Length: 370
Ligand code: ADP
Image 1: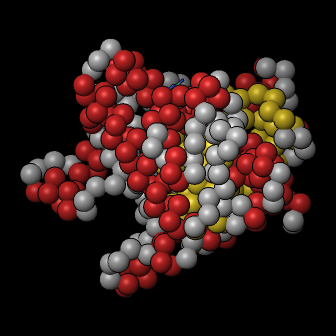
Image 2: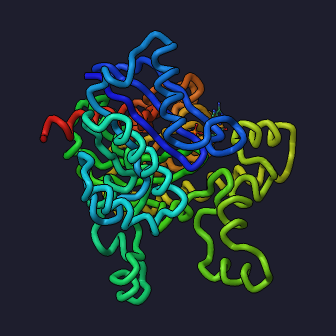
């Protein structure tokens, strides 16, 4: 089966083509709508088709299905769905919850439908995996009516990634997912942790928006909820400060962990501090989620930083030995899949994520169930 996975952002369009779940080609069109000659998402898709043909692959008409990433599915979507007019309406309805992402994702869907009306298309939501959370995990202690009226609750994001690495872990540990309790730590530009009990997400660090939780490249993660109000009072734009000027960048001026590590190695005090804050926050969540899970079978590191930074993994695991999480430094240095000692009660693992492959897989499943 040939599946094209699309991730449409406001000014970019990423694509990856799979045949029988093997990746054939990938790429991205950037600067859509800017002075780039690619005026809109429709033109961007035409460009994708050119690239697919040019690189010796195939034309759009040969595709069997298209899988779209959509950031926010609200409470409506707990699994991938085949696109129809009702689904499009429902995505529009939850757009107010993700005003930067959903309208762009939707553009990709609408344009692809226009271009290829007869090829089945499926949407996979970043929020869907977390819809198994219980109310005590997803509700904030604010007036209940605000949840009912505006949908203010924890949704969680990166669901496709947490689900993907959890499934991989189940294979690697040779245990059914429904018998596993996991803490999955996704550390990319955005970062989040998920507590997975018996294969289901029971808690995650991102909340109503992707701002909550861990320290990220430019996002603050958890702060005192009064801080945005205070920032507004002193004339700053809280949204800009907390989403774009905070996180690693806010502390040391760099949002890319590779650069932060380089600076820290040279002795830069702010970079060292940024790493300390980043690590401290992750540890807090490992502790909290261990308490929620009771028994933890494995802690999994994934995404750019989780997959590649020996330093961050080593600092995160330092001191967790009494919790049965014992890092083996040599394995960590070699980026092995299992980086814990043989006698570590909790397995420590590095599993590369692949959200696009998971979307292709889920697209296939959604069409099979049809
Ligand atoms: P995105 O969330 O954009 O998909 P990625 O998962 O690619 O991001 O992660 C990007 C982050 O991973 C950046 O902070 C980058 O510096 C970091 N990263 C990638 N490789 C390394 C490495 N070898 N050491 C430390 N950090 C790394």
